[in-house]
Length: 293
Image (tube, rainbow, N blue to C red; front, side, top):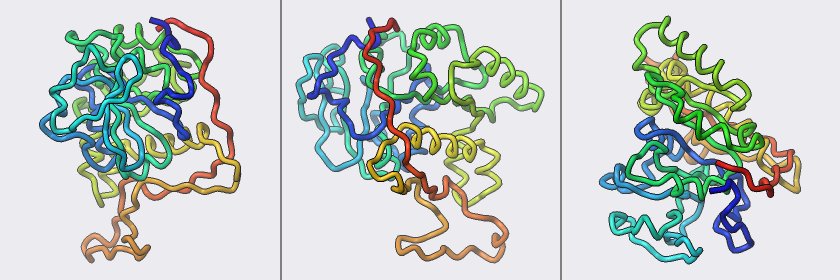
């Protein structure tokens, strides 16, 4: 399987006006939790989140969901019956949501690369469509050889637009263990990502208006770098265009500040604050040269 083996003509589902980020990693490393954090909700019915699925491509809008067959055909689907999808005949599932971040980029939630019940071709045939990757690695088993083996053959232009999240940092109970893991991963992935960020995704979701908890989760540094990455990948004819995403808890729907309880007046609302992104750089083109993956 080559990195650009799949057809990428004008009818390709990947022909998106927005940058495309793939969310990848081994099984059970927090990819679904990351999607929930970025989107503000679970994009799929709860009962199917652990179901074996092909890549799920999430875009902005209210179009009906469908699956893309291996031949490029679009077949309508019922999200409540995802168990019925024939994996061997499906390249990906497309769903559409009204989420702020999807106004800036498309997300592809990839299957776990280590799933023994799923061929690597299921996700590798879609990876070529992404401009960048958010890779999740579990802190207690961070950056395994199986992960490095997959990542080493990804084109450098994609690596330069990719972020590495060391998830479930709360599972490492001592500062010594945390530093040891981060130093090793940083050494072993040097030049393979544009940034590495330790994070507890569940703590970030639970933080809500607790600024200290949000900062301690590691989500602030990651969200800032994600905004910078999307700025680099975005393109606009109007270089003064300002785009926003991530709902700010500091304002209501009319832009009025939310009052804080007197007991919490010293705590600034958290979650990723509304950030203005100056869009002034052209999006790099996808690689045209087949490369192994």
